Length: 424
Ligand SMILES: Cc1ncc(COP(=O)(O)O)c(C=O)c1O
Ligand SMILES: Nc1c(O)cccc1C(=O)C[C@H](N)C(=O)O
Image (cartoon, rainbow, N blue to C red; front, side):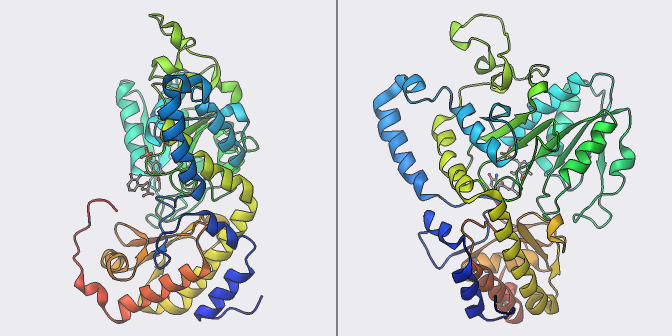
C-alpha cells in the first residue's frame, strides 16, 4: 500500500484496493452524492430487502393470508432469524430469538435475572450506557419494590470510558452487571470476556447490550460464557427502521428464567388457548405477543450479507477505515479544535469514531443541511461518524473530513441555531 496521503486520490486508491469494496453495490444507494455516516444509528437498505419486501407483502401476506403462519414459516421466524444472528455473536442457534425492541427485551431479562438472583441486591451499570437501559433498570427496581440498589459507575473523563471501580465494586451483593458492549457516544468497547469472568467470580449474572457492536465487532458470547444479551437490528445489521431486536440467553439458564411479560406467544401451547400461563420451554418463553412478521423478515437480508462477508473481515476493514479517519483528523481537524472523543486504541473502539468540538451541534447541522453529509450529534459536543464497513467508502470518509474542515475554516456553522432538532 502506498504511504498515507491527504488527497482524495489516495482515498480512491484505498477503495480500489479494498477486498470488501464491492459489498457497497449490494445496497440501495439512491443519491451517490450523499455521504452517509449514520449507519451506527440506522443502517442502509440492502437491495435484497427490497425484493424480500415485495414478496412478503404481495405473495406471503397478499396470497397466503392466515395460512402464512404455517406455510410461509412465520410462526418459527423469531427462532429462524435468531439462529442466524447467533452466528454473528458466537452463540448456539437455540440461544437467540428475535422479539420486541431492545428496551423491552432488556426489561424482560433484567426482571427475570433479578428474580433468579434473590438475596442479592446490587446492580452495576455505568454512565456510558444508553439512557434507555438506565431507565429500564430504574423501572425494574421500582417494579420489584425498591429492593435493589443501582450503582452507576462513572468514567473519570466524562463520557469516554473506561469506568473506574468496576472490578472493585463486584461483591457477594452484586446480582447483575448490565453494560453496553460498545458505548453509544464514545465507541469505547469493553473486554467482554474479562468483565464477564470477573462478574461470575463474584456470583453475578452479566447482561450485555450489543446494539453498537453487533454486525461490526466480533462477539463471542459462548466463549466468554455470557449469561444474557440484547441487541438491535437496525444499525449495523441493516434491518430497517424499528426492526425488532433480539435477545440471547445461555442455554443452561433458559428454563430457569421467567418472562415477566407472560403473554400468549410465550405460552407452551399458545393455540390451545388455555386460561393459565405455562411457559414454553427454551427461548420461546421470552416471546410475549404476536411477532411483527414484516419487519422481522426484513432483518434476514442484512444478516445474510454480514454472514457472507464474515465478521472478522468486516472488523478488519472497520479498523482500516477508522484508522484512516483518525489520521485525517490528526492532520486536518485537530488544529481547528476538534478532539478525538473515542479511544485512540482500535482494540478499545467499536465502529464509529466520535469527534468533539465546542460548536459540534452547529457543525453537525451545517454538515447535514449544506454539505450532504449525514452523521449524528450527541450532546454536549460529539459528532459521531459511523463507519459501516459493508458500504462506507474511503472516499466518503475523506469528503466528510474535508467538509468538516470547510465548515470551520469558513465559519459556515455560524448560520445555524444552537437549538437541537427533535430527532437526532
Ligand atoms: C445501546 C443501545 N441500547 C438500547 C437502545 C434502545 O433501543 P430500542 O429503541 O430498540 O429499545 C439503543 C438505541 O436506541 C442503543 O443504542
Ligand atoms: N432508535 C432510534 C430512533 O428511533 C430514532 C433516532 C435514533 C435512534 C437510535 O437508535 C439512536 C441510537 N441508539 C444512538 O446510539 O444514539
